[in-house]
Length: 269
Image (cartoon, rainbow, N blue to C red):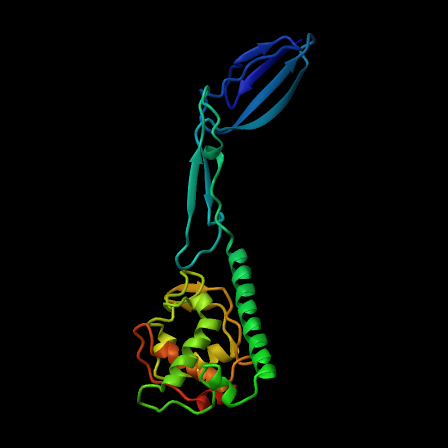
C-alpha cells in the first residue's frame, strides 16, 4: 500500500508515503490563495481511491477593510479604514499589530444622538412646566431676569428687540446647540450646519419653520445624507419661542435672512 500526494494540477506526486506516515507541507514556496492536495491511495492489487483537500495559503500580510462591504452601493463621501498586519518566523508578538481600530457603527451614533436630542427636549419641557407651576405668570419672569415670552413679533425689516434676541439665544442654547453646536457648524456627516444653510438663509422661511415645528430626517445637503433625525419641537415650544430661535438662526454665523413673526409659526402648525 502506498499514498501519492499531488499539489494542485501537478502531474507528478511531490510525496510518496507508506501509510501511516507524516510529511511536512512547505507553504512558503506557494503563492497566496486557494490550493488543493490530491491523495491517491494504491493498494497491492492496484486498486485506487482518491481524496481531495482544499486549503488557502496566506503568507503575506493580512488586509482588513472597514467602512464598506463587498458589493455595497455607496453615495456621497464615505470614510474607509484600511489596515494590514503580518509576521515572520521569530517575530515577537505585538497585540497592537493585530488590532484594527474599528470605528463606531453609524447606527450606534444615530441611536446615541437621537436619545441625546430626545433627552434635551424632555428636560426643556419639564423645566418649562416646573417654572409655570412654581412662578406666577406675568411679572415673575421679569423678576427672575428672563425676558417674558410673548407672541408679539419683532419689527419686520429692523433689528430684533433685546428681549427677542435673548429669548432666541436661550432657546437655541437649550434645544439646538448640543447637535448643531454653538457656532452653527454642526457635526460632519451627523448634524448639518446652520451657517450658510440654504434652508436657513432662504427668503421663504416655510421649510425652516416646518423643520423645527414638525421635525425632519434623512435630509441630503450638498450630497451628504444626514440620518440622525431632528425631533419636532412644536409640542414643547410656543409660537414666540420658535419664531425667536428661527430668527436667531437666520441672523447669526454670517446668515442674513428676513426674520419672521409668531403668526408665521402659527400658520405652519
